[in-house]
Image (cartoon, rainbow, N blue to C red; front, side):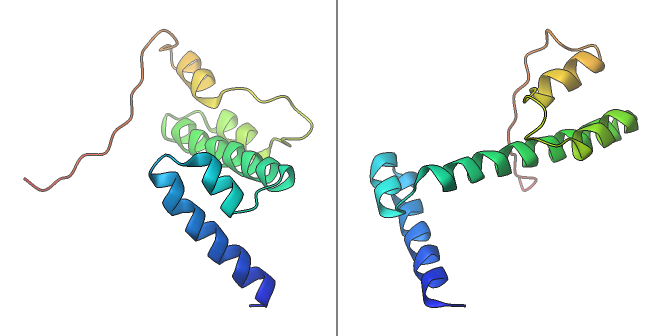
Length: 106
């Protein structure tokens, strides 16, 4: 790992601590975030959302829709909310959806 990469990783992890306590502007300054990394982060987030949505579609037996989400070229097509598409496809478009994590230990 070269020195610049190490420095970038160190700044990013230091910024995470500030983000955790709600100091977002300080975190952005610490990480020296510019528009280019922000756009990359947004693209990665959209790709992650599409892949997780594709998993949900595949589990629901909608393999073509899952394949379409994964093969989509993000720069060429406008972003469509994958969760809304999924809920509409399975007939739950008006349903409120909440996510949570529960411990299996009692």
